Image (cartoon, rainbow, N blue to C red; front, side, top):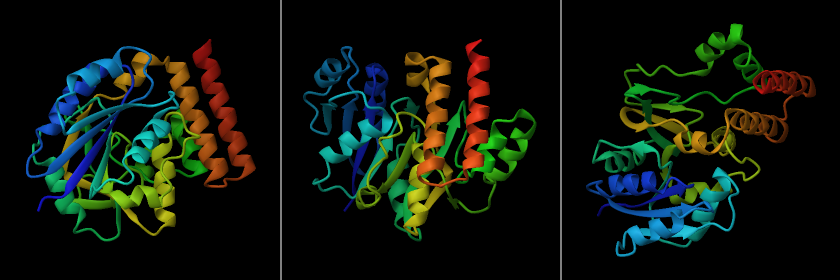
Length: 282
């Protein structure tokens, strides 16, 4: 019997992308898949258009959050909605991706069942067919500082990334991008859902940190992939400066509340972030 998979898609204003992607998901084969769309209080016609589009489709449900509390809040709203329902796996997914492989979900569930203490499993994220931020190591205060100093950025990338040319088809990794990942349903509830103190960015590193604490492991499937149009929805609704500020805020929060990084390290990081934001603002 094929496992039951729920794909959770967060929508913010870009309802046509969500419609296209939902049909993309419904084309998956050899798998029992349902879709839950959470409209994150878009304040446009998203909820009405999505509801109308899928009103007669029993495999798709559309709900609306009470406010736009960001990525973590919106996904948690959906996760709480289906907490008591009978699904084997959940996929958290952006709406601006394309899946060409009609057996992707089937392959992921088959792979997942063979892994040792798995938490999240993801295909390789690509942009225009090339791997892009497929996975990275849990950031330290030093690596976050290095990544924001141009002369040290290449060094950061070298030591913080993974070899995607491994002979293994699946490799253990720390952090997976939040655009698409699959997991056994109980995992996310055992982790305590997503941290809603982050509005955008940084959720992945917090989840990876919690996963390590639970002695579980994230994995990247090197032979599977999906295409992601990076930050399409975000960039159409937020300025570059606002996106950077949100990213910086999430980074500081992570180091203060999870990594318990040194006060000196956090001071240096805050100073770097302030310099970057001031340059963009001028």
